[in-house]
Length: 323
Image (cartoon, rainbow, N blue to C red; front, side, top):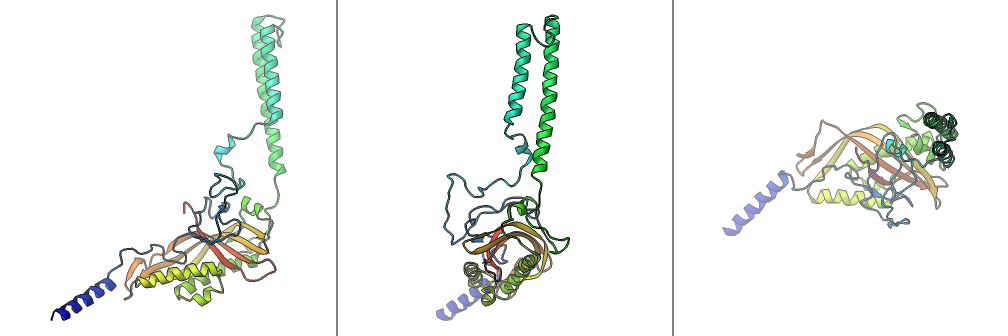
């Protein structure tokens, strides 16, 4: 009798645990589960440049097989050459040595004229000497402002050029070059067919994830990324849960950077897309997400392929900060 009672209690407890939601589920259960993981070659631990789709920095990697190296002490994640200047940087520009010396010389001459009585109008009297000094200061200010505008204009026009690659309007669908980021990526040209491959891989991986098809993912991602996907799917299954993604719609994207190293090509692209992202328990009950309300996701996906040619494979996913 006691044994039968214990068996019934355990059965009831198991039923309740299957029907109820587990204590902790991943809120973002899509591929990658809202984390940053994978490898970007030598740039794994450097933040990708900002783009129109991701105007802020990217989250650093949570998982990677690439050892973390810090060639510059205290550089931290995201240490790289400046690719964008905000308003705060404008007031911190280094002074031009020629303009600084000219202004100092003219102003010093005016002060000397006042003290010695031989200023611009020094021979007329101290009153006119003061007026002369003021006129000299005004002249100095006017000359400096004119030179600053002239030098600034020359620097601005001198730095103008192409964006590293040129695409005809609409040739890449919702992908577009991203100004300064594209200019830094001129070492590896990215063409319309590459953008189409990036977008198609995004959709294919979501579909393979939804079907829990690890074999299909091996044709779309590096072994490192496939291992992460497999671990995430296994963790969900261990909880008696399953993630379902559907209605994936690509919204927009642009290039962050593209480069070549050690016989491999890399391209990091910012992508914004929407999808239905929900998690069900063993009985099909929705325990996370919504079957009707899509969520919008902004991520940076890095793709790699041999430089001699081949299919682009997903090698990293990073979450966009501030999205």
